Every structure is written in C-alpha cells, then in structure tokens.
Image 1 (tube, rainbow, N blue to C red):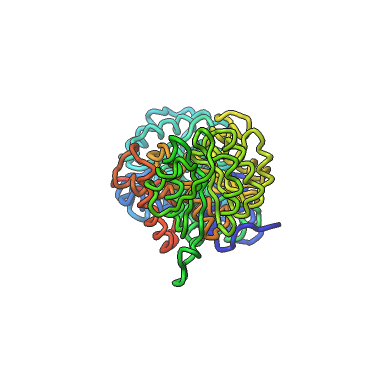
Image 2 (spheres, one colour; image 1 turned 90 degrees about the horizontal axis):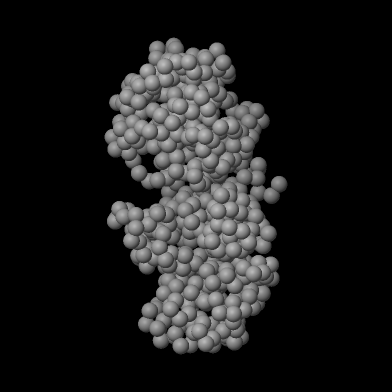
Length: 548
C-alpha cells in the first residue's frame, strides 16, 4: 500500500469515518495488544484535561454525567471518577441497565460503586421532567450517551434527553461531549433526528469527519483531539489521507530561509489578471503573492490599464500585453506571455480577467504550454467550464480554487449538490482531472489527485466579502513559487489566509466589515508564527474559553 503522508505527521490530525476509527481501535487492541482499558483511561484523562482548559472551575461545579452503553458510557464513567477525585460533586445517569454493560464499560461502572459515586438508572417509563430537573440544575453536563457507532435516528428517552440538553445555557451549564455530540453521524455530520449542541467536544485518536463538516461542526463547540495511544503510522498504513489543516500540520512545511537568499532565488510569480473595472482583483493577487514570500511578482495587464496598475502596485512589476476591445488580455498576448514565463516558478490566472472570448481562449492556450505550476481562479475557471477535459492537457501541476457556484458549473450540477457532499465532490474532481482542487467556503476543502484531502480549520465568518479569493490565489501562487509542492502550497495558502482574517477579527470582534486588503499586513505575522510553531497538546476550534 502506498503511504502518502510523512511518518512524522500527527495521527490526531487525520480525519476518519466511523468505520475507519473502529478499525484503528480494533488493530490497536487486537493486533498490537494494547488493552482496551488502557485506551479508555487515556481517553478519559485526556478529555478531563481538555475540559478543564475550556471550563477551568469544573472541580468546583455540580456535574451530571449521562451515559448510554458501550465504550462511550465507559468513557463517561471514567470521567465521573476523575472529576470526583478532583472534588467535583458528580452524579451519574445510566440510560441502560447495569446488567447490560460489558467489558471495560462494566469495569469502570463497578469502580463508581466502590467509590460511592451516586448512580441513577433511568427508564422510558420514568417521570421525565422530574428526572431531568436535577440535570438542568447542574453546573455542567458530560454527554457520554451515544458514540460513533450510531447509524439510525435517535428516538424515545434518548431523544428527549438530547433535545433538553440542547436547550441549556452553555455559559451556565456547558455540555461537554465525549468523542462526539450524541446524535451526530460521525462520518457525515448529519444529526440523526436530534443531536446535542456541545460547548466542547473531546474526540479520541483521530478527528471524525462529521465534526468538521457542515452541519456537524455547528454542534461541536471547542474541539479537543485526545491522543489515546494509537500508533502514529497505523492510520497511514490503513490509507487514511484526510487531514485537519491547522498550525501543527502545516508549520513543518515552511522551511527556514538560508542567509544567502535574495529576490532572485525566492521565486518569481507571474499573474494574468484584471480587466476594465476589475483592476482591484489583479492588485490583490499580486499583493497576496508578495506577502506569501515570493521574491518577485510580475503582472500581465492589458496595455490601456497599465497606468492604473503602475499606481496601484508599488512592489510588483507590470508587463503591458495586447488587449481586446473590452480592455482584457487578448489571445495575441500569448507569445509574449510564454516568452516571459521561461524560468518563472508560478503563474496565477483568472481574477478579474473577464469573460471575453479571446481572454477565455488565452487561458486554454496557456495550459499545455506553461512549464511551471499554475493557479486557476475566477474567470479562468469559467474559461474551462465548457470543456473541463482541457485541464488534462496541462503541462505542469494545476491548482483550481472554485467557490461552490463555480464548482457546480464545472460539474454541470447545482450548488446544493456540491455543498451537500463537499469532501467527496472535491476528491472526485481532483482525481478525475489530475488537479489540486481548493473548494472554497466555510471549512475550505483541499483535494489532491494522489488521494490526500484536507479540511481547513481557520477563518471567521467576517471573510464573506469580495476580493478574499483574489488574495488567496496570490498566496497559493507565492508558496508554489518558493518550491512548495501543490497540495501543501494550497493548504498553506488557505490556512494562512484564514488565520490572518482571525487575527483582524480578534482585534475588532466584528462579524462583518472585513476587507480583503485588511488581511495583507497580517500575513507575515501569521507566517512568522508558523516558522516558530511548537505542537499543541490538542487541536482546538474555536479558540476560546468559556467563562468560569
């Protein structure tokens, strides 16, 4: 089996389906001989540490632990024991008769009895309101009801409990989910009838896909990934190549620059962008490429627009090219562009280019003749939409950066179909056409034709404004020009872009009003942090702590 990831990549940053996680657990226990009880104890202790970071005064709160059956219940019982030992007033609600518990879950349940921790067993026929009242009056609830094995819709008593928990005030009574919020499909993120809205979720071993895709991510709260002892290379050997794109994953991809570096050795990005009324798009691409660290940036711009871009761009160079009657780049510019591209490291094409037939023909003519990696965005994507097979003629690696509407047009479908299955859509297109595909939007998806797939962790809602994609195109091209391979360059561009927005967002605390140009000054700061990054004990999203 071909292993695509480096052995040093953190296991906890892989994204797995429920079936894949079950197989990793099985292999760890049965084939490697690590006892399930050891995994469960590691999970509970890691979850307890994470929950204490999110809610620091948990040991001084009244905690209700609601447990279902199987390993999820066992994890809940172990957490009850840990918080009891820290001084919390803990009570356990068991939704299954104790005699139906087995294995490690039963062992942990028996420990509760020996420690004198109060346990209530609930039944469908109980007075629900009376039973639920003490839970609602708790100061924290640990959700250990349902785990990754859930496949059917939640019903009966369990559903009523989940619906009640979702109505709690997360500041007064935070719900802390074990492995995943009960009721979520671990593989798709779909609520199966009803799902807990958690203030924080401690997931074990690897991140479940359903926790980071819509709508599942809306139920997760702060996300902690707990190392439970699964060997680092086990997921790679099983062919799991989905990744949670965060600082711990991407930081090693930014290598230190030698003292002898200069602008001629830091990569030269060429940009084909801009037309009448859309010079701003060309400007943002060039600035994004420079902020990514490219040593030189040159913009191909229609002749009549050159005076405008000479003013708008200070650091980037411009090269006036033949234009159409609509002041967009014409097919006649092809020889000059190709001559200039000799020895260049990356080409970004599309933002503001226009939909003029000659400009579209120019894009398609460049594909088989440019020898360096290319980023296609915006109007360049529209140019290839009638015949996506033209992508297969490319003479160098391609990175495509469609938003959902552009992706739908490329596939000849509708936006809803794209959004309903973003990971599979991106992965399938990437493999079919041999391109790195960046499907933009909340939780941007990056897919590589070799099977790697990433889901981005960064970026606030304030990024919903024009020009953001133009800056991203420049960032990716800038990283490509520095010799970073396409999947990594795309992932770095997306992550850095989102983190720069988070930095501005954090200072303003505003959910709107963020401009694409606001990010530019933040990008070097984010890159500098990645250059100095040390791995964190867990992945977290969002980056916040609930009030004590």
